[in-house]
Amino acid sequence: MAGESTVNPDLERYGREQYDSLRPRIHQMRSRALAVAIAPDGMLAREDERTDYSPISYQVRFQLQLAAEHLVALDHLIQGHGLPNYAGYVLIRAALETSATAYWLLQPNVSNRRVLHALRMAFWNQRDSAEFAAAAGHRGTAWDEERRAYLDLLRSKVKGLHQSSLDVPRLSHTDMLTAVGRKLKISQQPSTLLAWRLCSSLAHGNSAAAVMALQHRQINAGEANVHSATSSWALVSALVRTALATFDGALAQFEQRASTA
Figure (cartoon, rainbow, N blue to C red):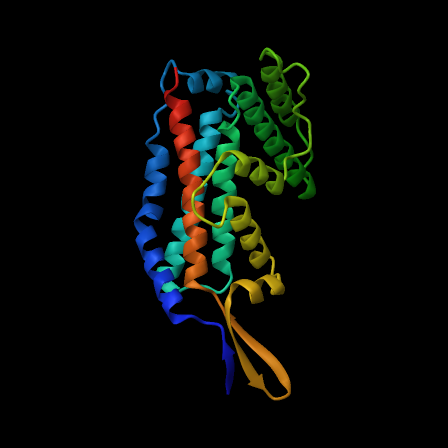
């Protein structure tokens, strides 16, 4: 015999309608990211030259395409199998992270600081790649060192970056999303940072977060109190809306930087 339920049918129906209204935006994300044109003589084109190992515009576009792919994958999962209990929050979290990374790369108002962000991101990625290879039993190569040296050479050529090392700890997602949240103001709730924290809690199996956030029913199972938890359309639609707003904010920044002379 089922016990008390926390499900609100009207709220869930509204959440499903809201999610369905967001689906066209989800499937337009990738084409919108690919459509951004870099003005040949513009500021971002010059920054691409100063980060030519891994140009900043490439990094930004790559992150935005990743955000699109994660939300499209979520929609394919939902349309094919229904709303998953927990796996969907992993995909929403990844979309928030990648959109925030794109915004973080472009966020500084000073061109040299954007260049530093892009060079550090490339350095961190190169360092991580070498560490992964070493963990798999592959020895480092001269090429690895040459790539790191070239990134440092690019840094040394930018006036004002001589004292700014690339070899610093990678910025955590918490710190990055906190920094982005101070600048990227979105009108709806939850905020980018709060949405990411909730998705991370659910993705990592935080049972207290699941009880707090998901819809659940108490089931009488002998002497034990058993709860059956399922995902919520109202919650998923709100989180996807925040992920889309974060993507839109990063894309608007990309378009503005790409067209600035």
